[in-house]
Image (cartoon, rainbow, N blue to C red; front, side, top):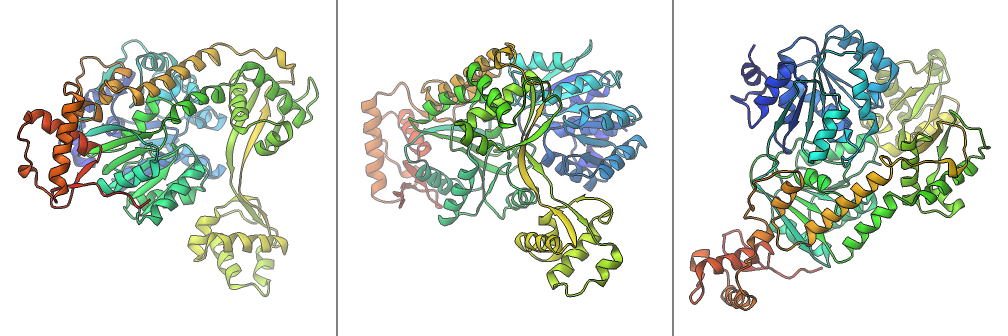
Length: 635
């Protein structure tokens, strides 16, 4: 079956878009391929179509569990057999999924980069028929990428297991340095292809707004621009506070961050995607791989620490090709805070060495001991005892992890486990069980296997949903059942772990190679400075700035952003005179665009000032498409 026939049969499209066909034909011909496409460019089509045309299973490596599950469900809805392996699955579930791929039952296997380094995966891989490997979010493989993931380096290792299998790498944000690094780290073979599409989004307008009262500005923007919206902030607590504030102001909103239980994440994501919530307030844990094409607005409540991150997050607006806006709010303090992140993310080497020594003391690790030992790590307790700040300690541990001295797993979600201590007969003979206990026991027995022989991973939120109660009732009931000796129950918790990869050494023995510390700090500084330049430069088109950052040339001003709409040739006195004329006319009441009087002014300049006032929302269009003054906020 030809590629276009597959596209039509399973996805209903008559033809490919942009460079999709170039990528499909390249990987279909067996070439290692790098596809550079903007967010919303249709990356999934570029590997799903050629995989359907070939024998074997396409292995898709992605860092996002949400994307795995969404795409697996989407493929299955089209009658395509797909599966995924991710954290939270039992050992038996993982083995079953991998063995089904060995038997050739699935066309797609989604895995995380961490999974491919495991012995189990590599053992099963040797017996699979693999069509090709797809590496999504391929910029993560590069130390110059904004989200460097060392586990991505294991992808090159599995090429030795399946040496004749081509690789397709896909990304929506890669600078020229990252493009080169991806090819090198993935061991691209001779004859590889690079398919490049401009990252320009003609339907997306970038706006930067300096304001002291961000809440007021956020409310006004949301009132002025209808449609689905995402608001990004860096702080987990702030996602909740802003969502609650928006609800008080009459909006439908929810929040999302990495610390939420998976069931809560799924519920909130689903509610937003199905438009039960207009606004999602989130950290950068939300959005990548989320297929919601009708997002009209993305607001950044704080300045991201790289153009790559900003470009990806802003690009989640307008994936349907219709007009959308990306608005970045900042104040005079934000640039100072951004510069402060450099020292927080890359503390001085002597400070990192001190953290290492204090960690060893915290765990009472003797000099020369520790190899292979893993300990739970309470970050808050450690900082209290040794007078550190959490952000710098966390950054120090991540850097020590990269040196290979320790392995640091932050905020690991340890899923709840449960096992019946009574056998089936004893359980059924048990008297005086409450109605809630009865429902929960029946749900447990229906939903999980092996509960009488081993500790089994469970999810209290799904238990609550299926047993017709809420999370707190399930938790308290399970605790009571454990107290009564009916079950052994280990509740879920989020914790950090530190593994000592080698023996404890003297702090001065720790060496920080340039590629781990100095080079990456310099690159981080450059990204911070680029973002500061982006928000403070009043002369350079925002779209042009971003595209230039990603190495594009021969680009034009967008003509839509706040920089392009300001008239650089008109004097301040003339701008103020036009503005005063407009305000005087509109103050008399709503006025249609055709009735605006620009007598005494050059028409083009008059319209430029009008557009600027609209863009800055000094004046707005009402439902009848008449100009009115912006109403002062009641905040």
